Length: 129
Image (cartoon, rainbow, N blue to C red):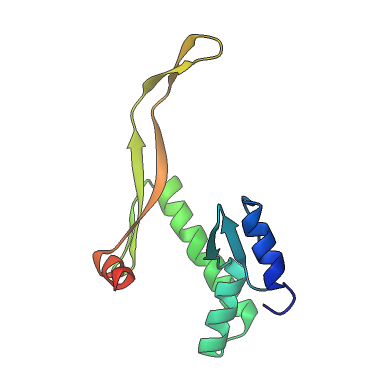
């Protein structure tokens, strides 16, 4: 917490700030709960530091991984299974009717697919421990 002061965080918490993100520590405050958030740049830095590879090389690998997962889900409609980590899956939502309460009308929402992530059982067990 080098640049951000504790009283500043306490002030934001007392004001029930919805979201506050600080660049250096990635502190996110959401209704009085603090969460540390990790960005893609943070992941690239962590991998570069642990492997000794250059950041540009790691960034290319991360971008390639993300584009491969997206292509698999969007174009080929295939799920991606990463053993011990989790699965990127496609969830199908059936068509349904919805109501607009303000206008008192009904509308139909078409069937659509949504990407989803389901963590592996071993990953869940590690989080609980």
